[in-house]
Amino acid sequence: MANLLDYVKWRGDIPFSAMPLNEVDALIFSELCYAPYEEVITEEMLCTGMTISTLCEKFFNKNTKKSIGAILPTDQILGLFKAISQTVRFKDVLVRGYVNEIDTKEEKQFCAMCFDMCDDSTYVVYSGTDDTIVGWKESLNMAVFTPIPSQLRSVEYLKQVSGCSGKKLYLGGHSKGGNLAVYASIMSSKCIQDRIVAVYSFDGPGFQPSFIQKYEKTEIHDKILKILPQEAFVGAIFEPAGDVKFIKSNAKGLYQHDGFTWELEGCRFIESGGPDKSSKDFHDFLKNWYARIQDCEKAEFIEAVYKLLTVNSSETLTDIASDKFKFIKGILKTDDESKKVFLRVIKDFIKERYFKTNKQKTNAKSLDKTNKNQKTKKQEITKKENIQAKTNKKNNKKGT
Image (cartoon, rainbow, N blue to C red; front, side, top):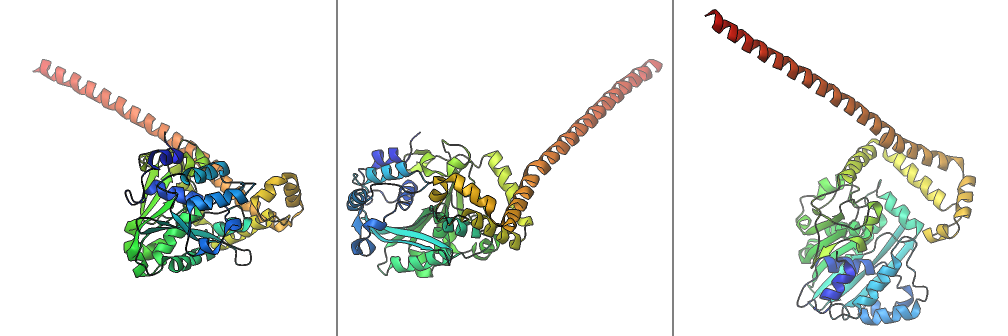
């Protein structure tokens, strides 16, 4: 089936003035937000804008390593970047407002940029979690806190870049970026909300139930579309805002989080008809297990994970991957309390998920077998009663 690169080849000759931004375009721009642009940042790119074709040329001249991070599909993202820079549809789109803010004290990882199209509209894109450990810490903090620093910054950023021109606005992002796009749309002023055409959350996590209940009746919810692969994990965490669309992926399990595995036809992703059953069962379990754990325990666990990941002063997942032996050695030497907290929660999860679930399945099978036996016995009794009734009826006729 077709993917993002196939779409670029197929629709690359049609400008946005002839065909406005759609969900596939939105994911393409969201993927570009992951690339490291720090070395090509200029005043032009920050304010007035730089075309995608110019940005691409400068980017590949500066970045000899061409590496994005240990967890992202580097080759595919950079290949997509090159491909769109040579098309009528994308090459003259203006890129501006790029920011990439990492703050370990505030526990914030925030990255965003804007794409101004020729049809007088702007797509504001928020990046998902990057390679930094503090970025993963902030994402984990979503399990306990709302808002997190990046959510607050997403609202501020939207206000800064939207301006007073009256341009149509689109918001979106992949993974955590999708969450930030939704949060910014919900928490922004009415005048900004009125300019928003659509908000795309590509496999982005949802929100705490209390947040959804408070804002679910706002008009902006009708403009929000959450797109999830059928075996979604990240995007199925917490409660969704707006409409949800499940789509097909050619990958399995966690690998479906990669947008390059999503199948499309024309300008739309192919719908799957709903979540995969095993995925739905897992998230039902996760939701119940999560609700049972107190917030203080969640916070303790997150801190323990962060301490373990940064035990060797590592700042990125690439740092850890580059010397796994050193990382494991560091964990063994770390304080016992962090390991205890980590193992306690993991053991509880495994016990609830596998041992208790298996016991419940066994009990369910046993109960089902008992019910079947009882049903069979009842049918046999009914059958005997019917035979006896017929016999009695015949005997009564003979007696008559």
